[in-house]
Amino acid sequence: MTTKRDYYEILGVDKKASTDDIKSSYRKLAMQYHPDKNKAHDAEEKFKEISEAYAVLSDHEKRRQYDRFGHPGIDQRYSQEDIFRGINFEDILREVGIGRHSFGKGMESVFNIFFGNSGMGGPGRGRNVPDRGRDILYGLALDLEDIVDGKIVELEIPRTDMCDICHGSGSRPGTYPKQCTTCTGSGQISRTQDTPFGRIMTTSPCGTCRGTGRIIDSPCVLCNGIGRVQKKRKIEVKIPPGLDTGSRLRLLGEGETSNNGGPSGDLYVEINVKPHNIFSRNGSDLIMESSISFVQAAIGSEIIVPTLDGKIRMKVQPGTQNGQVYFIKGKGMPDPHTRVKGNQIVRIKVAVPTKLTERQIDLLKEFEKLDKNS
Image (cartoon, rainbow, N blue to C red; front, top):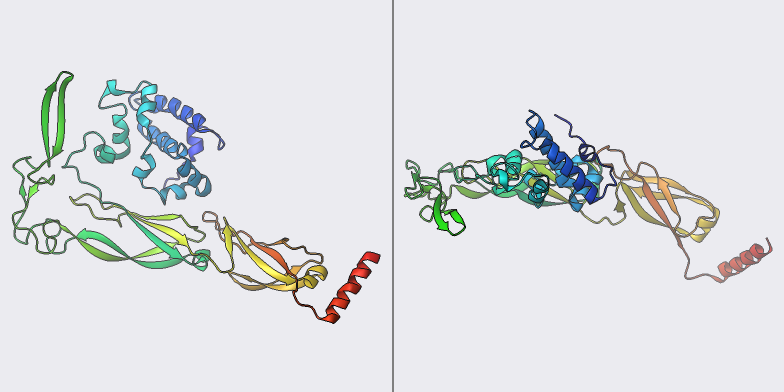
């Protein structure tokens, strides 16, 4: 497997670079490597690489996710289409001289380079090009303990799948769909109109076949001619250690099936870590409170502290103040990339008694006198 290069390195900018710096660097590199300007055999791949880097780093949320988790934070959370969605390449390419004057190239070729003629509804897309199935987003709630070492969970995912009777054709067994004679199977009707501004061609879905390009005279009794039915599919998912709420796992091809023979979509499992009754989390660190008496705080003590691995003994130093923190190394959460565990942070809460006996009051008064004379 080829290791992806760092996005900042690809654009030649510092990790603290501003959005304007990132755009300026991309503009220069786009002019250098766009296939319309550079005929080298690797120019297209380099242009795709710098464009992906720009698409991530120019978006605040994607950049934050990348800075925190690296490439897995992008690949697990976004599909390829999601990465490029919303980025206005058209204006940037026009600025560097790649515009509508090179129709069929220019910004049109951005879509062809990234996704081929079927990508993101780009130019040249037709009904005969198989559509990709829709992605599925599935929310998975997990306990904090599930995230420490990771686990394998079995999910039951509802999705549309190929009909078992007609095998996706939509027709009864023994019969077959016919090509629509209105659109000759394209699923689209094109009309040309002369206007004062020139000849304009418009394309719309065929009304006879409703854009499918097929006519089904004898529809399947199970799917009613759709070719797909709703099913529940059991899938085993491996949860890596250290994930946090909002992390997404991407399972290729486990989304909805295509309605015309194209590839299936992907399944995205979004993690939601349930609140814990003892610990809160800050990145790879776990935070908790531990109550001790003011006597233990004054003279020091050894207390029992819970961890996700079990209870351990922790030494409290004499003179410990309310709110003081202690660090237990390696008892936090594992980093999703390095698997190195963070720390457990124990915040001390000194408990002041609300009811005292006369003997206790006398002893405290005696302590106060001794403390003033010391």
